[in-house]
Length: 54
Image (cartoon, rainbow, N blue to C red; front, side):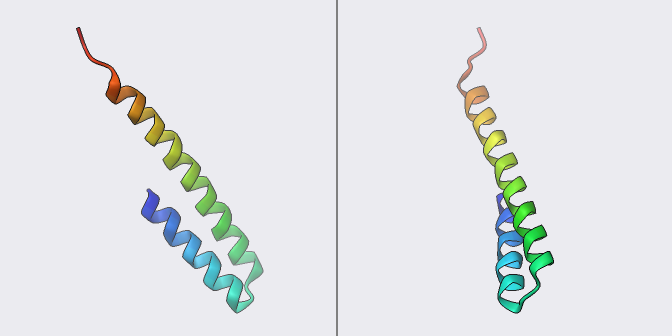
């Protein structure tokens, strides 16, 4: 998922350099959403991984 976020970030940067504002904004928003989802899932996996079963 982090790979997808980085890919959308690169697409946003390239689109911004080429002057495609709408595409850049959409790709940047998607990268931000995917990064937040990645962080939430990462934190959940850290918390769930520390639990031990009796």
